[in-house]
Length: 417
RNA sequence: GUGGGCGUAGCUCAGCCAGGUUAGAGCGCCAGGUUGUGGCCCUGGAGGCCGGGGGUUCAAGUCCCCUCGCUCACCCCA
Image (cartoon, rainbow, N blue to C red; front, side):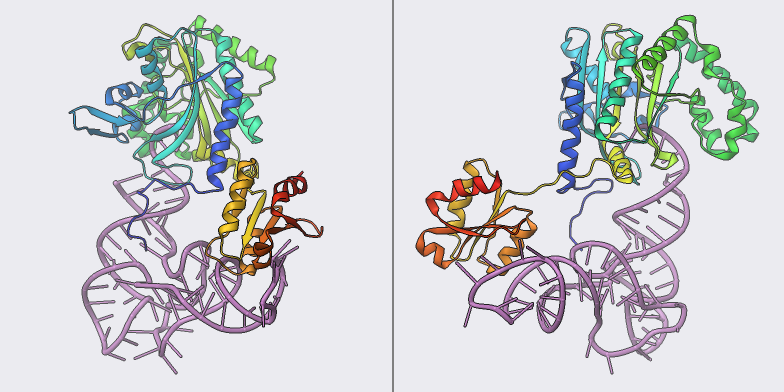
């Protein structure tokens, strides 16, 4: 067993999965940059206070923060998400609004790892600050939907709800508290604990025992202000017009405290119910102000890269992009010619690999085959002496040819064209 | 943080229940068959503190305890 291995919840991503990971981000960037979003790269480390507004009743802040005091006596934390960082950046730099930003990168939460949940996990996302317009809500949601479509992930369900304005939400939480306390004896032990911290999240319980009390609970729609209801109705009409299908779910409560009004979640059908959310987001109009900025509306979403890729695996969608070189150089005459040839071909823009350590012809040819190369370029002792090389097709029955070294590049290029 | 399952070769695993010669298989790797040619086939080889520690026993990969790790679920969330 190795002396050192990855810390719990951390993992190495090796090829070819790493290429898929990178390609994921590329597709996302293509989709959102085409809609006017610019990349923002916030630091992994922030003052711990930046994240406090996520909600001190949430585990994310209360129990899962990777925080410590640095050598300058600053209390800092590895970011558990990036929305708060983006809002902090907005307050610090005050870019012109609307500020449309996208990001990708790792976040950190000290949780017990399991399938689709790591202590270091990647998200991609977008945020828009400075605009209060239901059509922006619809744009953001539509872009998320389009992204999954571009990836090829089919079994995605968009779930939609509105938490109302802050006052609506506050009255609703109080009503929920009264309702569940009246039915506390029907609730599971776990939900009774949740009730004490955050009545809203009791709605999120999937335990059968809680189902009757949840079914009888008041619904957020009864508490919407006229403005909040109108805003939400416009969002729905815009999605309808764009042909984006969604399901209304009055029980959808997002985990973080800053959400208000429009909230949504992307759920993958192939994932188990407990962790089927591959992405989520909503409005967080008060967050910038909480971080010391001016009152600024905001909306965005984050998508979990790891979980989305798991969903793709289960569906057979978005396979790892093939990584193959164009040519593989075999050299049984010492290796110097292989170095010269690989250098020449690579400088010409070709993808070229070779074998090392002077292994046997058979061994090097096996490596050539496994590399996926379409051509083998072979230099044995005869060719080395004569100043020639053999060009051998590996993916067809075409005959191999022997050419002078001066003609090697053009021969290879022609064979690959 | 709480439970269940699992740690044996680089990888996937058998062997454990009923302790007993030198711990196995497939794949992969290296070499040979073909003294200069991949895929298919055959032969050989390298590679294991059987996760770690303690205990029971004449004897432990196998039984017991502890511990670490992985994993699944709860919780929480992407």
